[in-house]
Image (cartoon, rainbow, N blue to C red; front, side, top):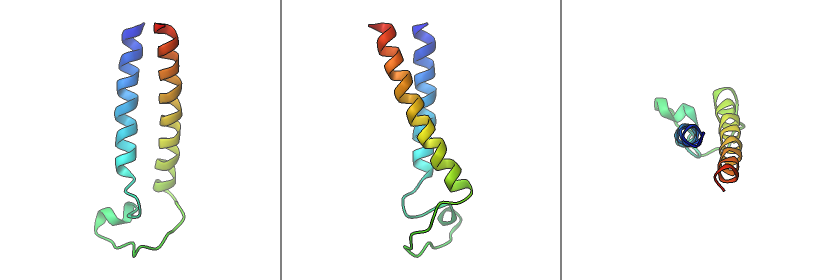
Length: 74
């Protein structure tokens, strides 16, 4: 069971890293295609909001999985 938890932690951590990297602070997803955000703050909409919520969910799952792994191993 420890092997499965380790694999789940690795997959979750890679997904969490990828979701954080995709969220370039202040750039937005429009900046990836060459557009200029102009340094103006805008509300998250569409894909950016979904990516933000996925990051929150992944981080909560990662913390819960880590605590569960420590309890099982301890």
